[in-house]
Length: 115
Image (cartoon, rainbow, N blue to C red; front, side, top):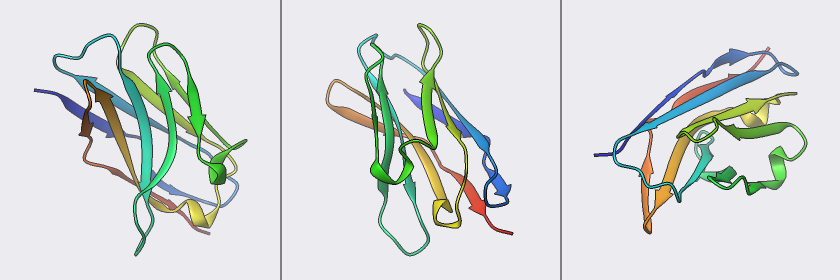
């Protein structure tokens, strides 16, 4: 059974920073893709960033230049460093791992950007 546990959300002022973590456990093959998605209040879930086990990275347009995804070497922990946060970044952030054509999701962590 695969489990993902996210942490690091909270309340931050505009212009501030937060770092999210996602630890995946269980029977996970080396070839996988980890990523972050978010769901703003009243909106659909949207893509934030993904990173393959080989280091290939993709970002959604709204976060390019402000957010950085990374992973621990050889492991299944992903991070999302979020800088210069804006009120429109307020959302529940979800971690996802994909392998063998199957997605596994974390429970989500709330990020609120407000003064």
